Image: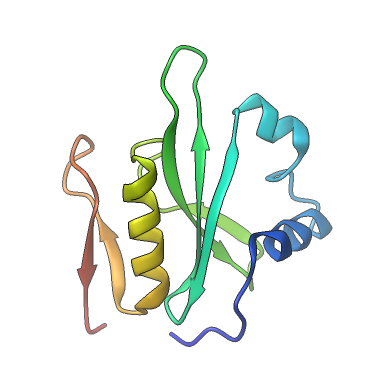
Length: 118
C-alpha cells in the first residue's frame, strides 16, 4: 500500500470538519473526555492515538486509523484497551509497514502486530 500523502492530526481534523463529521467536535471530545495523542503517517497508512476516560474508570488509549479517501476514522485496537506506550508503539509500527495488521486473539489479550504477504 502506497500512501499519496503524509497527514498531520491538524490536517485530519480539518478534513473531517469539512466533511461535516462530528468526530472532532468540541462537544464530542468533551463528552468522551478525549485527548488527542501523536499521529504517525507512513507507507502503512495514517494512525493516531487517543485516550478517553470513562466516568468511573481510568484513562486508557486507543489506536485510530484515518482513511483519507473515505474521510473515515476507524478504531483498530480495542477501545480504551491500551496503555499510552502500547498504543504509540502499535500506531508507529502499523504506519511504517504496509503489510502489518493488528491481531487480538481474545478480548482480554493485548493486540499484537502480524505481517502478511497479502
